[in-house]
Length: 501
Image 1 (cartoon, rainbow, N blue to C red):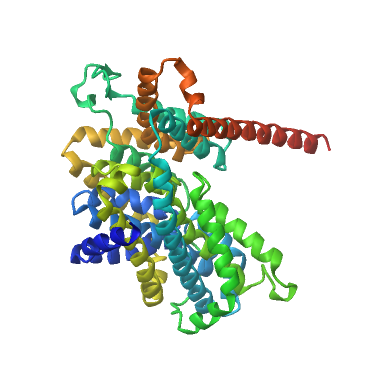
Image 2 (cartoon, one colour):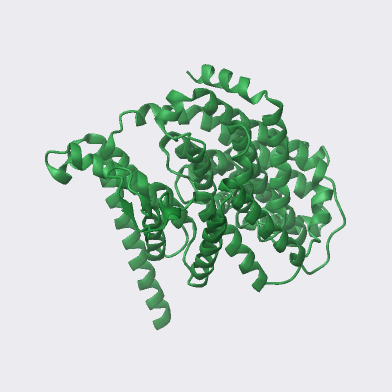
């Protein structure tokens, strides 16, 4: 099955359009990742409208390549400027910047690029092996199981994220409420449309995502500094010596890639958690003379291998179960839905060539990352000089053009700016944004399958305990809530004890 899927996917991937957009996606991802304040999520959001106007696999290849390149690009500014371009590159500061200070900037960048590429390939291998196996299990799912699976995804996103549990849950519920606007799928009734024909189909997911993340992020950036301050290092170019250096860190590379893939499969965990965890494990097993925190090569390898392996891990539940692994894969899932490709067992059964193409495009993006990272680092260093006063208006114009081009609708622009304002308010109140998007995507899945479960049930809610798989999922949901409550109470107790002390 996997062989046939990959063969049919290779036929699609051989298209010049797919290859070109994947190539360009890695370049754009590296640029966006290297510029502080942006990141892979922002890149995928900005290019989402573009991806909807090309052949499906070419568009998905563009977005996945931006995801891969952006996850690595943050290491460039982290190593050279001590400013992580993305949150997932924060752990790279510990040893990457000290290496640069010792005159080994080229080695540090080379190790980061090699580790990111190899970690991404490792995650891709596990994606190819485990996603079909998970789908084979998911074919047993009916409406009750899909309902609880959606609830599990919502709870996991809200609880595993670093923000406060209550705020995460509330943000997810807000997303579910937003998803109810429009025409009810089962009864064809109108909900919260306020007699406006423009709201009969609800809000377009692209308008929501672009406004919530891109517009609010640009507004947030305006509050900060005008440009990156401090001395910009001279352009450096990693050499083939980096391949020799990383060969001495194979155990660390494999261990960190495994950790990154594992955390990627956990909805909401993200690359930043996996990077810090991998660094902590690598430091714990390292010898004292390796000097972790003072420019250790292993520290750069551990963090960068983990955060790119997370990309492959996050795609496993996204493609096989329809549960986004993180905010970026939530946007990718939105792109799939817009293109008429529904993640889950149906996608593997009905469009195996697309699934195989996605697998191979992800592998290809990581190979491009290795080559382009070495060639273009000097260019990315020069881009770090760009002032925000030029960057922010350009991004906002691109957001407006891309959103308007979707349906040639001015209403979509108003929706985009409305959700931009909502994003600003949520940021100001310290509410996470990712659960809002997850709730918007998973909300209809939970609602429609819950109602179908009630229609086929003879014993009301007991249908969720009568079936073995749904019972297991229900127990997992309860366990997540219990753990969240315990952690919250324990945190309050520790804080109170600290205040008394």
